[in-house]
Length: 238
Image (tube, rainbow, N blue to C red; front, side, top):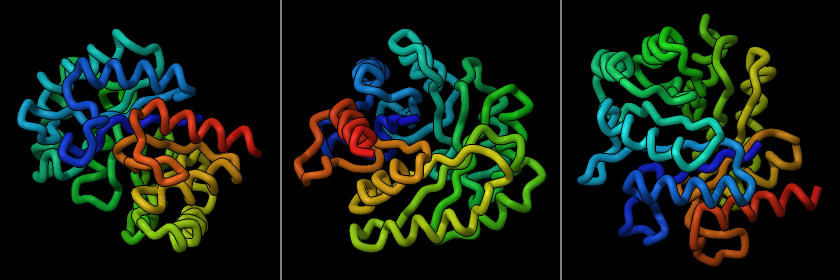
C-alpha cells in the first residue's frame, strides 16, 4: 500500500507544488490516487497556514477530500498543532466530521490519551514511531498497541547514506510491532532510500510533498502524483 502525504508542515515558500487549501488538497489527492495511492494523510491548515485540529477546519478538509477520492483519509494529531495534551484530546472529541484514521506520535506527551479518545470515537489510530526517540519502547509497552490500525515507522534521519541503516535499526526495535501492520517511510534526503527498503521488504510505505520535494533522480517534484508514480515504479522493479 502506498499512502500519499499531501502537505505536512510545508508551505508554498518551499515549493509551489504544495497544496494548502481544501480545494487544492482535494485535487492533489485525486491525482495521487489515480497514480496509485491507496490512502491519504493530510495536515489540515488554517488560512494562515498553521497546522490545526480545529473541528471547523478538519471538517472542511475532510469533506473536500471525500468528495474527490474514495480511499481512507487520515489527519495528523501532532503536538505542534496543539501543544497541550488535554486540549488535544478535547479537540479530537469536538470533531464533527471524523477521519478514517489519525496519526499519533507515540513519543509525544499525551499520546495514550489522544489515541484512546480516537478509538472511543471509532477513528483508527496510526501509531507514529519515530527513529531517535523512545517511541518504539513506549508503543510496545502500551495497552493500546494491539488496537492500532498500523505503525508509522518514521525514519527522521535525512542522510541518504545512513537512513537505510537507521530504518533497519528502527524495525529491529519494533520487532513484530505487536502484530499490527507497519508502514515504513523516511523524509528529505532519506525518503528514497527508505522507500526502496520498504518496497524491498514488502512493507507499506508513504510518499508525498510532506516527506520530500524531490524525485529519486534529484529533480524537483511537480506534484504528489508524480512522487506516488515514482514509488509505483520502484515496486515494479521488485
